[in-house]
Length: 304
Length: 137
Image 1: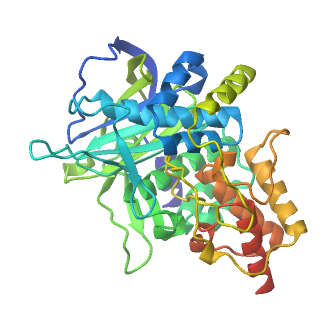
Image 2: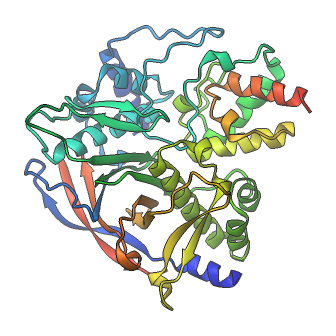
Image 3: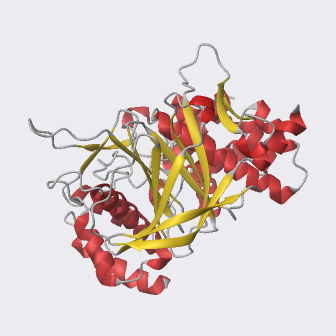
């Protein structure tokens, strides 16, 4: 049983997005994701060097956001915080939902548990689409996921990220027993580290999608289980298995795992609205420099 | 280049409208910032001061916490880490945060519940919580 899980775990289909497809105009209207799609946008801080561009990004921000950006301790952290806000504002505006929606006009707030959301300017004539977004970043990549009609959580981590604590000690402390068993069964330390990081991103994406905070869904109260749809490992799906009864953890969620820029693992979690047989999530990836360019990235199936 | 970003971000910070950031050690400084850059599922961010314990941590404890935080976040030499330092503004993401908590648990022989961990905003908060947990042992 256990070696089977670990085989599934390491063979979970992870899609690599690292080839440019084509560049689209930054200004032509873009369709919102359909209810079966997820859009994933990302920016690489290393590619944003222009002083005037960074200054334009500052001008997009609210006063509170500016305070936050400049409270970060260090220039790279400030730049990263700035890019994150610029990314989310320009990305949502990119869909050109309404003429009064622009990067500067968007107003954000946090829900009761701290999850950011948009406050839309509604009127008698206009009701906003049920757009959801979620941000995640590392020092070298910032990503924003967008869905319509479903909450979304995303998490990105550098593939090369090393842990200060021993992986199995950390997993025993924070993950479920079944997950520890899966990780323990991996004999190659480097493979184990990669699988640990991927598992972290999946758990984190789920908790962020739920939007009830870390203490609302502690990591050791649910297992991420890879489940075979058929005999092909690449068709396996991911199930949430709550470990406590009763539980406030819902399970009607689907996941996608993607590899970005050859350097990062990303996990996406969104609701699974009755798609039969666990169809895989359609993910459209775009790499962007806000206000400047965007490139749709094609996926190359990677069955490793 | 870090130096380009450095001089530029420094010049950009003059854009910010609120020039004075009040930071007093015993006052829970009202944070106007929306920590909305990302939403780590474990967020060490502004906590109401009613959770602050009455026994303040010893300087030794604060120093140990600073050391663990500095190591985990690879804080550059020139950046100060003190009791007032906020984890979020030092660049801790959710995985860093959990690693730091685990490091503190191992260093001090304590166990930190998720609810408590979520109330920690600064190094001082962490040190105070440690003292409280250690004294209960």
